[in-house]
Image (cartoon, rainbow, N blue to C red; front, side):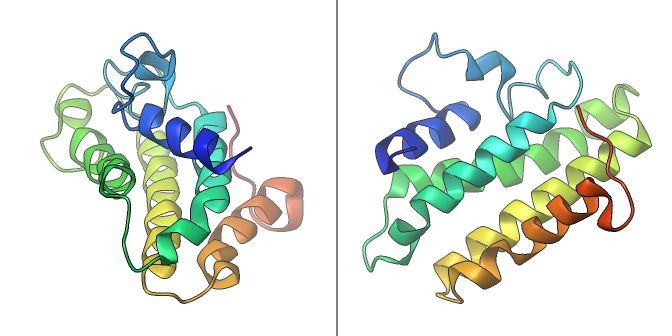
Length: 147
């Protein structure tokens, strides 16, 4: 994946793509939450792969405002729509506690990676929680449900 493709994919997952017909608007990371039609783990992995690809750009002195906004949006709106007390998915009983826990873990992994990249903690540190997640999913620890 090129840096430009990763940039565009992250915008699409955040619902911020300039292409209003992009399929990720309805099926991407935020798209799967509104309206809620279940968690799709491949969206989490796509976000992390794209984030790894664009990681050098988050260490530049001048940042791409559109990209940072998309990353912030994924983390903020994911929590606001699904995890906060009184959020639309909580209030309407649409998300199970297990899915809420999974989404919370994904958002924590994404936000940790972004924070580490922005403060120049290094790519290895930034993606360490994701690597742990992958190891657990492969059976090296507690299993994660996949979708």
